[in-house]
Length: 475
Image (tube, rainbow, N blue to C red):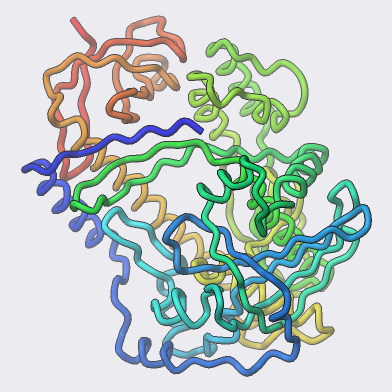
């Protein structure tokens, strides 16, 4: 898929950017170090041997290249006209002592943070990148979901068990996509077929995966920084369907048992839909028929106006949060973009709430009461996750702002062409997309400008320390 990289050369600008990113970490007030007690506890953590032995199943992991915190492993097989999908999740609940030092550190963090100059992990690396990670060719405890799928990809039955597994392959998205495109045999050979069947089911129930282009700040080997923007590969979307299927199964278990924690998002109201329709019309890509999910999936990824449409669609996907319950199920439990109840239950190495979901689901699946530690602290999770999500969002947005300001600094005083993405302030200003370097910013626009138009603006100044950029209309 199309990918663009904007690069900052080593210079005084680079030094100023490094200082700005370091200052941002301090401003976030995010814990960056683990206490000696936490590190010691993590290094000594050793779960009891699980009863089920699935080491003969040839699991594989699929992640970005270089990842070491491997939460999930899969095994895909045909079964008659249908399929059997085994989805193993790192057994973090078995490693973390409730009320212990690792537990306390994880609650303080909420999730792994991804900064331009390194990750701020949820757990010490000895757990997240070693003992609990589903690394290849080593025995690992896991929580294994087994799904029996019909020929159309629908789930017939599923179960959850604690087991010992041994992954056989550490796959990455790019090389595995290339292998599948060539028709090579792979542990992921059935992923496209199963993923596309699950996407069709999502479409039928009214779900809509937005699949915004990834925007990532990369620290290069020479210490410089780049911004990479690229659409997700097809294999990433197919793989995501395994996680979505698991999250819906986890939600089903917890809703039936009336205890758990769900990821929710309200459905867009008609006012939001109307505004989005007007934006698509203004961009020349009108949404006139069908569900909005069907419309978003129909967009041509090669079309330069697809990005402005997706940016506009982001306004429909707001208000996501968590709801916990014990004894009765809340009225509004659906995740609107998925069009079903859904739980985060597949990334416990990187997200706090998943440990609760998995521990509760395992107990329910075994016909037992959820563990007391999980039940007693359920009410704390929505606020803990909201705080960490806000911190993560701020870190991501402000990191990109600072890197973009650094990218544009050599162009101060220059006239730049940009595409209008979204009008703001009654049409006086707009979000704009600059092609080279690839930067998104806000600028004044001429009266009557419409989304999708190309305008010329002059870059007046940049402030790398704050990520601010000021533009003026070309005179």
